[in-house]
Image (cartoon, rainbow, N blue to C red; front, top):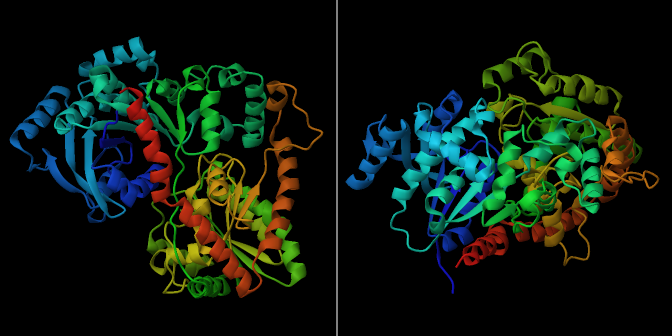
Length: 592
């Protein structure tokens, strides 16, 4: 017996506006033709963070494309009388405000259900909090001082009530997809109220406990993954080794994801990390659902046109036309391990110098997600030559940017001969955003299409879409072995005799004479131990890059053709058809 999938509800903090990685996943999935053919109706729901003025401004900005059908504060109501009355009753009962309408995800419109819970009557949800403790063992009082936790607990019941009325006519299978921990309180509310109505899935875009342990210790991924490997071999869980983590509310929630019918993981490492959490997750069904990547199709002439724009820009900035373009497009956070890029370039610099070749490394990354104003950029460009030079006393270098530029990037540039690094700490890649020295024709896609090498050697990276986006444009993609995308690329390229486009940097495997008899041995790995491995293995990465850089049109064409072959096997349509839909169907059949 089978049941037709009729509705998928995505619960996420990026329902109203795209903020980061989950927003990119939503755009990929919801716009994929295979998804639209298989899922007749999708609703994306989440809590509004009304304290974030920027988020609220973006929500109603014309570019966001929100078409509102119901909002009492905005005096908008085009719903049927019965449904609008139900929405009003929920708002009055809970002290919340509902916004319902449609907005585009990568150009394809879907329903959105948003709630402002900033004025909720907290006494109204006390019974729900009691049930969270009684049924799931979650002590809300322990975490409610965290505004994120409180927002999504307060959101759960009134949002589910609104969804219930919004989907009363659904006859087929209906799935709740909790994107990360934010969706779990909503799933719990549905399980308590109408467990038989819904199939539920937890979509693990990361394992927050693993991220915290990796980022907060100087041994980073080297320490954590060696510890995890030894511990799992000995049948030990994360808490057996690292101690109880229940002070961290995300950990407490994720452990309860085993109550869902299935768990989806975006990478092979995420599967291992979830199992490592122990408890019921050791035996819960976990399906791999990789992220997709844009499968662009360009010819060599188009790639060379983009490369020429980047070479012109480099000529203006650093005084020479580079033979090779290197890049890293990323967020400016610890997990991206930007220092590893410079470690590799330190080894690659003398190799290129000896060969009589030059390169430029464009690091497009900003600690300030909204970027600097174009007027500021033009002023700094004129005053002191931004983005080659930077200052930390005028709003230019912010947060982690200051130490990275002064202690890592600038010293590298002073010593290097053949490679110069340029930190473009601005949101965007065009003249209007990045100053008058950038070619007028330059667009963001030129950076993706024209690069020869894209770096992404993260210490924690559940998947890593950005690292492999230039794959189908013929770039060499240099990623660390902890990146979830490695598994997908290897599957997609398995039938090829070779695939030089992917270079995997291994910063977790210790030298052969380092033997870990127990997790305690691996736990001793600190920054010194990690540095030793990075220094040695980054040289291997540099030598591999040097042997694979294209030196002729024929070699460039081969990398381009290979990249497009593999890229099309990693599209969002492939993800939906081969991974997501089979996982959802298994969850549907599980309880028939």
